[in-house]
Length: 339
Image 1 (cartoon, rainbow, N blue to C red):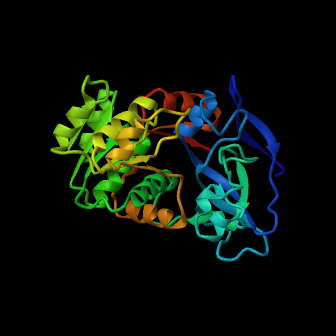
Image 2 (cartoon, rainbow, N blue to C red):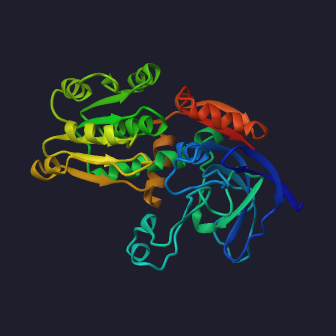
Image 3 (tube, rainbow, N blue to C red):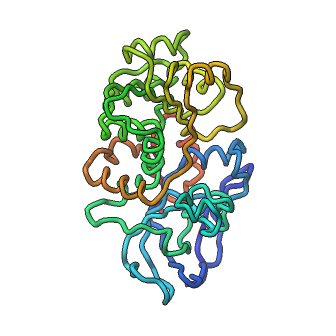
Protein backbone atom coordinates (compact mmCIF):
# COMPACT_ATOMS: atom_id res chain seq x y z
CA UNK A 1 0.00 0.00 0.00
CA UNK A 2 1.57 3.29 -1.11
CA UNK A 3 -1.13 5.83 -0.22
CA UNK A 4 -2.86 6.67 3.04
CA UNK A 5 -5.09 9.30 4.64
CA UNK A 6 -3.96 12.10 6.91
CA UNK A 7 -5.52 15.11 8.62
CA UNK A 8 -4.39 18.62 7.73
CA UNK A 9 -5.51 21.65 9.71
CA UNK A 10 -5.87 24.79 7.66
CA UNK A 11 -6.84 28.24 8.84
CA UNK A 12 -10.43 27.92 7.65
CA UNK A 13 -11.06 24.17 7.74
CA UNK A 14 -9.86 20.72 8.79
CA UNK A 15 -9.49 18.18 5.97
CA UNK A 16 -8.71 14.51 5.51
CA UNK A 17 -6.52 14.15 2.43
CA UNK A 18 -4.63 11.46 0.54
CA UNK A 19 -0.85 11.26 0.94
CA UNK A 20 2.02 8.90 0.27
CA UNK A 21 2.89 6.41 2.98
CA UNK A 22 6.19 7.61 4.50
CA UNK A 23 9.23 5.36 4.18
CA UNK A 24 11.38 4.84 7.30
CA UNK A 25 14.88 6.26 7.06
CA UNK A 26 17.90 4.97 8.98
CA UNK A 27 16.96 4.47 12.63
CA UNK A 28 13.26 5.07 12.01
CA UNK A 29 10.08 3.07 12.55
CA UNK A 30 6.87 2.98 10.50
CA UNK A 31 3.84 3.06 12.80
CA UNK A 32 0.17 2.48 11.98
CA UNK A 33 -1.95 4.86 14.04
CA UNK A 34 -4.78 3.47 16.17
CA UNK A 35 -6.08 6.35 18.26
CA UNK A 36 -5.05 9.97 18.76
CA UNK A 37 -6.01 12.57 21.36
CA UNK A 38 -7.01 16.12 20.45
CA UNK A 39 -4.83 18.42 22.55
CA UNK A 40 -5.65 21.96 23.61
CA UNK A 41 -2.64 23.06 21.58
CA UNK A 42 -4.29 21.46 18.54
CA UNK A 43 -7.47 23.49 18.92
CA UNK A 44 -5.55 26.68 19.68
CA UNK A 45 -3.45 26.19 16.56
CA UNK A 46 -6.58 25.49 14.51
CA UNK A 47 -8.00 28.83 15.70
CA UNK A 48 -4.75 30.67 14.97
CA UNK A 49 -4.01 31.40 18.64
CA UNK A 50 -1.03 29.10 19.27
CA UNK A 51 2.17 31.16 19.51
CA UNK A 52 4.37 28.54 17.85
CA UNK A 53 2.13 26.46 15.53
CA UNK A 54 0.60 28.40 12.64
CA UNK A 55 -1.72 26.54 10.25
CA UNK A 56 -1.53 24.67 8.01
CA UNK A 57 -0.11 21.82 10.06
CA UNK A 58 -0.43 18.05 10.47
CA UNK A 59 -1.87 17.35 13.94
CA UNK A 60 -1.61 14.43 16.32
CA UNK A 61 1.08 14.11 18.99
CA UNK A 62 -0.99 12.17 21.57
CA UNK A 63 -0.91 8.95 19.61
CA UNK A 64 -1.00 5.20 20.13
CA UNK A 65 -0.17 2.94 17.23
CA UNK A 66 1.21 -0.43 16.18
CA UNK A 67 4.68 -0.86 14.71
CA UNK A 68 4.36 -1.82 11.04
CA UNK A 69 8.04 -2.08 10.10
CA UNK A 70 11.44 -0.98 11.35
CA UNK A 71 14.68 0.04 9.69
CA UNK A 72 17.31 -2.69 9.82
CA UNK A 73 19.44 -0.65 12.22
CA UNK A 74 16.69 -0.38 14.88
CA UNK A 75 17.01 -2.45 18.04
CA UNK A 76 14.53 -2.94 20.87
CA UNK A 77 11.36 -2.31 18.87
CA UNK A 78 9.75 -4.91 16.66
CA UNK A 79 6.72 -5.10 14.34
CA UNK A 80 3.43 -5.74 16.11
CA UNK A 81 4.30 -3.86 19.30
CA UNK A 82 2.03 -1.07 20.48
CA UNK A 83 3.83 2.22 20.98
CA UNK A 84 3.20 5.79 21.99
CA UNK A 85 5.16 8.83 20.91
CA UNK A 86 7.45 11.17 22.82
CA UNK A 87 6.89 13.89 20.22
CA UNK A 88 9.70 16.35 20.89
CA UNK A 89 12.42 15.90 18.27
CA UNK A 90 15.75 17.20 19.62
CA UNK A 91 18.92 17.87 17.66
CA UNK A 92 20.98 15.95 20.29
CA UNK A 93 23.98 18.28 19.76
CA UNK A 94 23.22 21.60 21.48
CA UNK A 95 24.12 22.31 25.12
CA UNK A 96 20.55 21.60 26.25
CA UNK A 97 20.56 18.16 24.63
CA UNK A 98 24.02 17.24 25.84
CA UNK A 99 23.10 18.23 29.41
CA UNK A 100 20.00 15.99 29.48
CA UNK A 101 17.49 18.77 28.87
CA UNK A 102 16.47 17.84 25.36
CA UNK A 103 12.96 19.19 25.94
CA UNK A 104 14.68 22.61 25.74
CA UNK A 105 16.70 21.78 22.61
CA UNK A 106 17.85 24.94 20.83
CA UNK A 107 16.73 23.51 17.49
CA UNK A 108 13.67 21.61 18.75
CA UNK A 109 11.05 20.27 16.35
CA UNK A 110 7.79 18.75 17.54
CA UNK A 111 5.92 15.88 15.92
CA UNK A 112 2.30 16.84 15.21
CA UNK A 113 2.95 20.55 15.83
CA UNK A 114 4.44 22.27 12.81
CA UNK A 115 6.41 19.17 11.80
CA UNK A 116 6.08 17.43 8.43
CA UNK A 117 4.08 14.56 9.95
CA UNK A 118 1.49 14.00 12.67
CA UNK A 119 -0.24 11.06 14.28
CA UNK A 120 -3.65 11.81 12.74
CA UNK A 121 -2.69 9.76 9.71
CA UNK A 122 -2.91 6.12 8.75
CA UNK A 123 0.87 5.82 9.06
CA UNK A 124 3.80 7.90 10.29
CA UNK A 125 7.54 7.49 10.74
CA UNK A 126 9.71 8.57 13.65
CA UNK A 127 13.15 7.78 15.05
CA UNK A 128 12.97 4.70 17.26
CA UNK A 129 14.22 6.69 20.26
CA UNK A 130 11.03 8.77 20.16
CA UNK A 131 8.81 5.75 20.81
CA UNK A 132 7.79 4.08 24.08
CA UNK A 133 6.43 0.53 24.08
CA UNK A 134 2.97 0.39 25.68
CA UNK A 135 2.68 -2.30 28.38
CA UNK A 136 0.19 -5.06 27.60
CA UNK A 137 -1.92 -4.24 30.67
CA UNK A 138 -2.69 -0.70 29.43
CA UNK A 139 -5.49 -0.51 26.85
CA UNK A 140 -5.44 1.94 23.94
CA UNK A 141 -7.85 4.47 25.51
CA UNK A 142 -5.63 4.61 28.58
CA UNK A 143 -2.36 4.56 26.65
CA UNK A 144 -3.34 7.67 24.69
CA UNK A 145 -3.12 9.54 28.02
CA UNK A 146 0.57 8.70 28.52
CA UNK A 147 1.78 11.78 26.62
CA UNK A 148 -0.67 14.34 28.07
CA UNK A 149 -0.08 12.97 31.58
CA UNK A 150 3.69 13.31 31.15
CA UNK A 151 3.28 17.10 30.89
CA UNK A 152 1.80 17.45 34.43
CA UNK A 153 4.32 14.91 35.74
CA UNK A 154 7.09 17.16 34.45
CA UNK A 155 5.38 20.29 35.82
CA UNK A 156 5.04 18.80 39.30
CA UNK A 157 8.64 17.58 39.26
CA UNK A 158 9.83 20.99 38.09
CA UNK A 159 7.88 22.69 40.88
CA UNK A 160 9.71 20.69 43.52
CA UNK A 161 8.25 18.20 45.96
CA UNK A 162 4.54 18.90 46.58
CA UNK A 163 4.28 16.29 49.33
CA UNK A 164 2.54 17.84 52.33
CA UNK A 165 2.16 21.20 50.56
CA UNK A 166 -0.88 23.30 49.64
CA UNK A 167 -1.62 23.51 45.92
CA UNK A 168 -3.87 25.65 43.74
CA UNK A 169 -4.64 24.60 40.16
CA UNK A 170 -6.04 27.22 37.79
CA UNK A 171 -8.08 25.53 35.06
CA UNK A 172 -9.89 22.20 35.23
CA UNK A 173 -9.44 21.11 31.63
CA UNK A 174 -7.46 18.03 30.66
CA UNK A 175 -4.11 19.30 31.89
CA UNK A 176 -5.54 20.78 35.08
CA UNK A 177 -7.25 17.52 35.99
CA UNK A 178 -4.10 15.56 35.23
CA UNK A 179 -2.05 17.98 37.37
CA UNK A 180 -4.59 17.26 40.11
CA UNK A 181 -4.04 13.51 39.72
CA UNK A 182 -0.26 13.85 39.89
CA UNK A 183 -0.42 16.11 42.96
CA UNK A 184 -2.72 13.62 44.68
CA UNK A 185 -0.33 10.79 43.82
CA UNK A 186 2.55 12.84 45.26
CA UNK A 187 0.72 13.45 48.54
CA UNK A 188 -0.16 17.13 48.41
CA UNK A 189 -1.76 18.24 51.68
CA UNK A 190 -4.67 20.21 50.23
CA UNK A 191 -5.66 21.08 46.65
CA UNK A 192 -8.06 23.73 45.38
CA UNK A 193 -9.03 23.98 41.71
CA UNK A 194 -10.54 26.96 39.89
CA UNK A 195 -12.48 27.08 36.63
CA UNK A 196 -15.21 29.17 35.02
CA UNK A 197 -17.36 26.11 34.22
CA UNK A 198 -19.34 24.57 37.06
CA UNK A 199 -19.31 21.05 35.63
CA UNK A 200 -15.52 21.14 35.41
CA UNK A 201 -15.24 22.30 39.01
CA UNK A 202 -17.55 19.47 40.05
CA UNK A 203 -15.44 16.95 38.13
CA UNK A 204 -12.29 18.21 39.86
CA UNK A 205 -13.86 17.67 43.29
CA UNK A 206 -15.13 14.24 42.25
CA UNK A 207 -11.59 13.34 41.21
CA UNK A 208 -10.10 14.33 44.55
CA UNK A 209 -9.73 18.11 44.86
CA UNK A 210 -10.51 19.32 48.37
CA UNK A 211 -12.47 22.29 47.04
CA UNK A 212 -13.21 24.22 43.87
CA UNK A 213 -13.70 27.95 43.30
CA UNK A 214 -15.49 29.78 40.51
CA UNK A 215 -12.76 31.49 38.50
CA UNK A 216 -15.18 34.38 37.86
CA UNK A 217 -15.76 35.04 41.57
CA UNK A 218 -15.12 38.68 42.57
CA UNK A 219 -12.42 37.59 45.03
CA UNK A 220 -11.15 34.34 43.55
CA UNK A 221 -7.77 34.80 45.26
CA UNK A 222 -9.38 35.24 48.68
CA UNK A 223 -11.67 32.26 48.17
CA UNK A 224 -8.78 30.01 47.14
CA UNK A 225 -6.71 31.09 50.14
CA UNK A 226 -9.68 30.54 52.44
CA UNK A 227 -10.28 27.07 51.01
CA UNK A 228 -6.60 26.21 51.44
CA UNK A 229 -6.47 27.72 54.92
CA UNK A 230 -3.33 29.65 53.93
CA UNK A 231 -1.44 30.87 50.89
CA UNK A 232 -0.64 28.31 48.22
CA UNK A 233 2.80 26.76 48.38
CA UNK A 234 2.53 25.97 44.65
CA UNK A 235 0.15 27.30 42.01
CA UNK A 236 -0.14 25.55 38.65
CA UNK A 237 -1.52 27.95 36.04
CA UNK A 238 -3.01 25.75 33.32
CA UNK A 239 -4.73 28.72 31.62
CA UNK A 240 -1.84 31.20 31.30
CA UNK A 241 -3.61 34.46 30.50
CA UNK A 242 -2.79 37.75 32.20
CA UNK A 243 -5.58 37.51 34.76
CA UNK A 244 -4.69 33.97 35.86
CA UNK A 245 -0.96 34.74 36.10
CA UNK A 246 -1.74 37.71 38.37
CA UNK A 247 -4.13 35.59 40.44
CA UNK A 248 -1.54 32.82 40.72
CA UNK A 249 1.07 35.26 42.03
CA UNK A 250 -1.40 36.61 44.59
CA UNK A 251 -2.37 33.11 45.71
CA UNK A 252 1.29 32.13 46.16
CA UNK A 253 2.26 35.35 47.97
CA UNK A 254 4.61 35.20 49.97
CA UNK A 255 7.45 32.85 49.08
CA UNK A 256 5.39 30.53 46.88
CA UNK A 257 5.99 29.03 43.47
CA UNK A 258 3.93 29.68 40.34
CA UNK A 259 4.33 27.11 37.56
CA UNK A 260 3.16 28.13 34.09
CA UNK A 261 1.82 24.92 32.52
CA UNK A 262 -0.64 26.29 29.95
CA UNK A 263 0.66 27.70 26.66
CA UNK A 264 0.20 31.49 26.67
CA UNK A 265 -1.24 32.94 23.49
CA UNK A 266 0.60 36.21 24.03
CA UNK A 267 2.85 38.15 26.40
CA UNK A 268 1.42 39.17 29.79
CA UNK A 269 2.27 41.82 32.37
CA UNK A 270 3.12 40.63 35.88
CA UNK A 271 3.35 42.57 39.20
CA UNK A 272 7.14 42.41 39.24
CA UNK A 273 7.67 44.47 42.43
CA UNK A 274 5.58 41.89 44.29
CA UNK A 275 7.49 39.01 42.70
CA UNK A 276 10.82 40.48 43.76
CA UNK A 277 9.95 41.77 47.21
CA UNK A 278 7.96 38.70 48.27
CA UNK A 279 10.41 36.22 46.75
CA UNK A 280 7.88 34.50 44.51
CA UNK A 281 9.28 31.97 42.08
CA UNK A 282 7.77 31.92 38.57
CA UNK A 283 8.68 28.68 36.81
CA UNK A 284 7.97 27.69 33.24
CA UNK A 285 7.33 24.02 32.48
CA UNK A 286 8.04 22.78 28.96
CA UNK A 287 6.79 19.37 27.83
CA UNK A 288 8.68 16.42 29.38
CA UNK A 289 11.65 14.09 29.49
CA UNK A 290 11.83 10.27 29.28
CA UNK A 291 11.61 9.91 33.06
CA UNK A 292 8.29 11.78 32.95
CA UNK A 293 6.96 9.25 30.45
CA UNK A 294 8.10 6.44 32.74
CA UNK A 295 6.23 7.94 35.70
CA UNK A 296 3.18 8.62 33.52
CA UNK A 297 3.05 4.96 32.50
CA UNK A 298 3.44 3.90 36.14
CA UNK A 299 0.62 6.19 37.31
CA UNK A 300 -1.70 4.82 34.63
CA UNK A 301 -0.83 1.23 35.49
CA UNK A 302 -1.58 1.96 39.17
CA UNK A 303 -4.94 3.50 38.35
CA UNK A 304 -4.00 7.00 39.57
CA UNK A 305 -5.62 8.20 36.34
CA UNK A 306 -8.49 6.32 34.70
CA UNK A 307 -9.48 6.77 31.07
CA UNK A 308 -13.15 6.65 32.07
CA UNK A 309 -12.65 9.88 34.06
CA UNK A 310 -10.79 11.76 31.32
CA UNK A 311 -11.88 10.48 27.89
CA UNK A 312 -15.33 11.93 27.23
CA UNK A 313 -15.81 11.45 23.46
CA UNK A 314 -14.39 9.54 20.50
CA UNK A 315 -14.93 10.26 16.81
CA UNK A 316 -13.73 8.47 13.67
CA UNK A 317 -11.16 10.11 11.44
CA UNK A 318 -13.86 11.14 8.95
CA UNK A 319 -15.41 13.29 11.70
CA UNK A 320 -12.14 14.88 12.83
CA UNK A 321 -13.55 18.41 12.43
CA UNK A 322 -16.33 17.47 14.85
CA UNK A 323 -13.74 16.07 17.26
CA UNK A 324 -11.88 19.39 17.21
CA UNK A 325 -15.14 21.29 17.76
CA UNK A 326 -16.05 19.07 20.72
CA UNK A 327 -12.59 19.53 22.20
CA UNK A 328 -12.84 23.32 21.90
CA UNK A 329 -16.41 23.47 23.24
CA UNK A 330 -15.43 23.44 26.93
CA UNK A 331 -17.89 20.61 27.54
CA UNK A 332 -15.41 17.76 27.16
CA UNK A 333 -12.18 16.74 28.85
CA UNK A 334 -10.33 14.57 26.33
CA UNK A 335 -11.66 13.84 22.83
CA UNK A 336 -10.10 11.04 20.80
CA UNK A 337 -9.89 10.42 17.07
CA UNK A 338 -10.01 6.75 16.05
CA UNK A 339 -7.86 6.12 12.99
